Length: 328
Ligand code: UDP
Ligand code: MG
Image 1: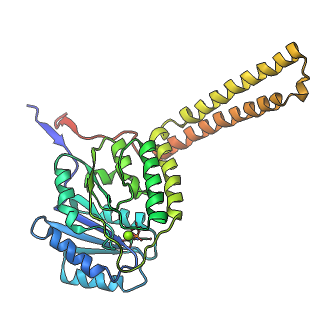
Image 2 (image 1 turned 60 degrees about the vertical axis):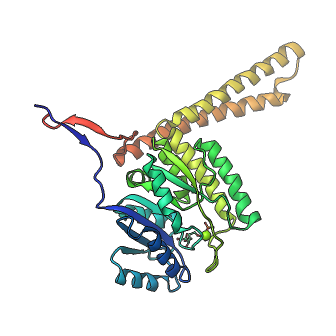
């Protein structure tokens, strides 16, 4: 007799984990905690994971108070400030809920939106991303760069969302288990997840102006986001076959070198232009050197990629489930 076992990832003991990264938000924490409770109390079995990203104000003492009074509150305290992405990673790694909500601690995201995001997940999505349609931030320094960044990210990742930067998102935990986050990359989780086959949706959420504490970011974040975008695009599309990128570029430059080389010879034979005085000769030489560089870079990258995947036992694919017989 064969019995078929459906193998899926182990489930958490809990239904919902709410992950909140924070840096110096002492004025906002009490109201935030109360609003989260109001949104989820009685509806879900939940935990709240506050990640204190190196606060120097009274934030941690307040969190200690929450934890002492309520065992569903878990607190992770970083030794120093490592950034919002690192804080989210730490929270995700410890989340026990099957579903995970991430949100900012400054009350700009509205905990009252949580049930709506979870309902959307229930429709069969793996990631539901908040869209701050009426965003309450400065127009010139925040909303405009963010609009341009979102447009660019949509184009390049081919995952169409209006607002990647909104922290308020809902995830199935298994989707998070597969992503490693660096830099400012938490905003790319929907794109990374979608590339691995997850279903991604978007939901308009409430956004409120910051009333206490100060904003931690300025324009420089947009630059980091663009650089991260280039990285994830490269890793996402070509991380297993870098020679396709560099080799492709190399073939292109060889073609150009060949073309210009012929032109130099044609100039010499038909018009009589002195070859050494023809700037196209230099261009041909430069293109030939570039070709060699590209091909070698591609081969080096191939070596690196093998080391990367094999040293960490990382697969080059993502399995959703396996059906197989136990006694084989
Ligand atoms: N934050 C953090 N670490 C940092 C910077 C910010 O955990 O290094 C938290 C911050 O406390 C807030 C959230 O990340 O809960 C978003 O920060 P902020 O409101 O300054 O940025 P924005 O609303 O513009 O995204
Ligand atoms: Mg904010």
